[in-house]
Image (cartoon, rainbow, N blue to C red; front, side, top):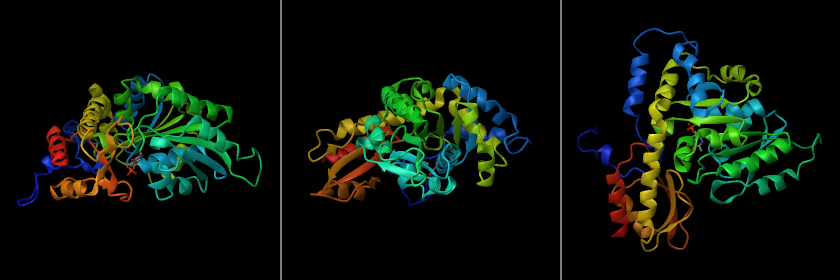
Length: 355
Ligand SMILES: Cc1ncc(COP(=O)(O)O)c(C=O)c1O
């Protein structure tokens, strides 16, 4: 509920971020249930102990699971485990690791270089990765050594890598003795969008290490690093502790992850968010001056709208971010839907846009 005189938070046209939304009741209940008695600390509790098996059944593969509380920590710790200080990490120029983590990957790797590539819709291609690798001479002490490729799924632009695209990128990684990391802060939206098995867009197509996100899709604060090969875990546990991310009451993070996977909840949540993004995109298509900028495949819509329309929407209470500065009277904005976005907020946004 909102304070008297404030807008009702449940009906806001809130499209800034999936992080702006609350916590799913089932996941809150799981935290409350985990709080009912004492349990061993630092991940030695039974809920954390059961996660590997639960993730293994969802991913159809044995997996080492490390709960964390931020996506930045997941990315930075995962990348630092597979990339030495003299390494290079190939990624998209507008990926979260490149532009939104304050240099955490560079910091945690002790100075590995991010090699940021252009690419439409937030995706890098096998061809561009191959071309970038040609600039580096293997074993040349004067150059960083490409060790890792990192891709986001779904991307920061609301697009999705198809299994074949990931396989092609992991092929480049394999041929060059590199590892493939996936930033899956929105993995659920990708799995729901493709209606595939999580395996089909991860280990089965060559992903080695996954940052698995739940916070944006209904958790209070729960992420995890997943390693699909035990040898890749290497010194991760020491890195996690040294970075201050070995959580003493880990059971509360683990309880969220358990509830997230249970009964396919993560995919139901993501499917709802994706459907509303689709509804926004369909509704905006045909509105004079509106131009959908990238394929809407997950829960984000990047759309150019006329500046007066943007002002009208904001004046009526709609919230969203500008994604690039105004140009020729239009601005690219980003609309993000979540597990708790309402159909009503979408319809009100659309009717305001059509006015
Ligand atoms: C693609 C992507 N990766 C990772 C994150 C994780 O960020 P945080 O450290 O805020 O949990 C985000 C959050 O916006 C994101 O969009």
